[in-house]
Image (cartoon, rainbow, N blue to C red):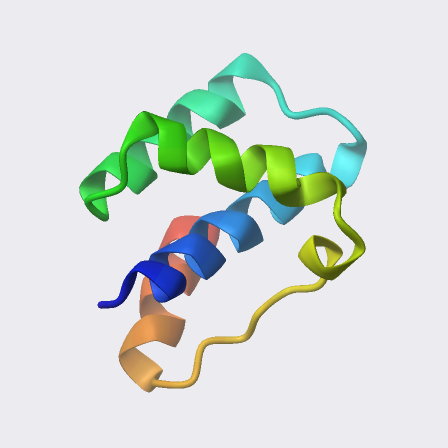
Length: 77
């Protein structure tokens, strides 16, 4: 999978974790672990979290392929 797909995957996880207005340490730990599984560096994951303040970052990016959709559903649940 491409870097942008992983970026969007992590972004969607951050959006879900922030629904209550707070990204807890435990949520961040899980997101960092998923990013690592996807081959992302901790700095790449932190960049996604920092970008969450941007208006474009506030929208979910729906995956195109069925495999990507199932991968995200698995991680979101």
